[in-house]
Image (cartoon, rainbow, N blue to C red; front, side, top):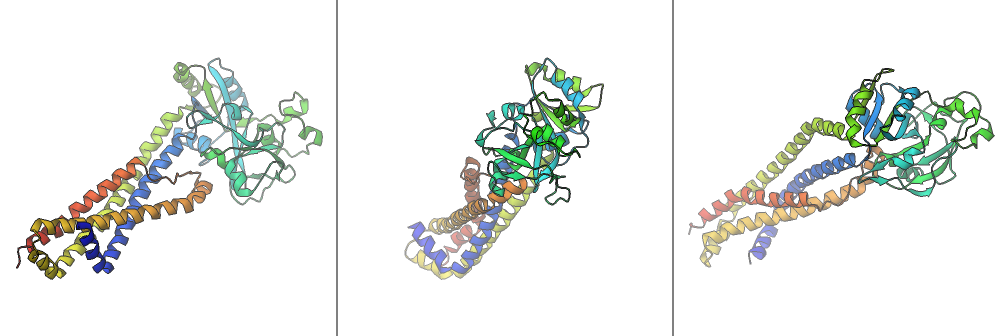
Length: 412
């Protein structure tokens, strides 16, 4: 009976009720959207790389090294020498190493120069290895392996020829047109920056910056060949290196050794520690966004309270009739609370559906432009708790008009 009477009462005031629902829906959209994207972004960052004990680069800040080596954000301040890399990789405590060279791009997507170990040892999420949807790892100097998003967005397939560009911009006037690459593999989606990148060999990265013409026979020679001609494409410097150690106990020892490297100034960071530092810096922004979302919701709730308080004065005749037929004052109090709850429930539903539609529409944009794979599943525990708290806050905001209706119940 409460719900039937409350719904008819709301329909009778559909103009003001509709505007109130719109205001609350927008505030709920913002609140749930901020929380969902914040949580999804944190999960994306945490799952980008796993199983890497140390990341080594030229002397710089730990966050800068983490951002450009793992998340492909920003640019390195300097490179580290190949001799330094070989010295570090040959340490007995180092189980495997993945050298990385950055600096080129293809239509706005980053190109990663690396070795075959990248496909063997790099992992993400819960120790998941890279998988191929088609093709295989690069084996020749001008082979390229595409991330899933690159292949899908640019409509590339196995055998496609492409040209790399110098620099990281979407538009470049320095194309390496004389040294095209051929697609030999496409990686399975990972939900990490790997999807947004192209992987080539270190020799291929070095070759495109070499001014001399490369013979066709050399182009077809496997990169692990001992041919003397391939030595000229041995890189002199690289951007960073990821290390997997034989024992976790040796992590701090190796880190200290690298930080005190005598040949050149280097920095070794623990990815997990650097990521924690990043979230500590982001905490102020997170809390600010939360505060703004809560204030928007509070303003909508105050609008709801004001609307219902104004309606009480217009409903004196209705209240009088309910009293005449025997409705107690508590009935009127509960009636107003039920009306507010219905408005809140409708607003939560419409705000949630709008957020779901928005995520589905913008998911490709977020992935291609920011490398963020935001899960459209918003029906998670945190959001359900927020929905409950919103209804509770609505009942509190409706307490004043409900109490006013309760008092007016004594008027005959």
